[in-house]
Amino acid sequence: MFKDLQSEYLKHKGTFNLKLLWIAPLLTAMLAMVLMGPANMQNGAYNWWSIFILPGTLATVVSLASAGEKRKNRHGLLAVVVHKGRLWLAQIMLYTLLLMVTVLCFYTLISATGILPGAGRIPLGAGFYASLLLFVGFAWQIPLWMWVADRVGSAVSITVAMVCNFAIPIFYATTDRWWLPFAIPARLMCPVLGIEPNGLWLSANSPLLDEGVVLPGVAIALAIYVVLTIVTTLGFNKREVS
Image (cartoon, rainbow, N blue to C red; front, side, top):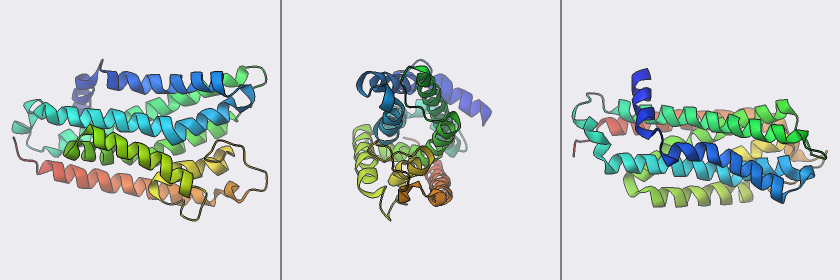
């Protein structure tokens, strides 16, 4: 599997897809610094990141990669690889690792802004915890958007991803239906960072500060990631050579 990961990385090395994973955190930090002001810079950045920029970036990267692989007929590898599912699984694993990298990159950049005068600071531990939860909360979308892009194209995949990741958290993250998969990341940010899905600080007695949602939310996201990875990999393993 390590060689498969190396092969996948080399195929995408130097592409805009990989560069976007570095550009997105930097763009978020710059927008927060310019538009939000020091006092609301960090909470605003985490809000944009979790609701719009991270899911949009992730969907764009994996969708373009998956559609591109299909367009190039997987570089002819389907005809020579015995277990075709390994190609699919390696791509999922690669973008899972890259998701972790971009999430930690964002955490580092936003945490560094806390040195600015008058900055509203999110504690380093809380920011790191939130970043890990965002990683878990969004990882399941990697096999999903890869599959959608492979079936109907990257444009549909990216569009559906943007609508789901923006609309569902806004309408459901603060309700008793927070467990809907697309709403989970925004809901988990409430008790961990103390911010609402709209980016505002929560009041000290807000019921959204209840940490009881964290463990179920993580469990749901991890279960979906495992199921989608297995199902899509098995399906790809049956792919006929075209």
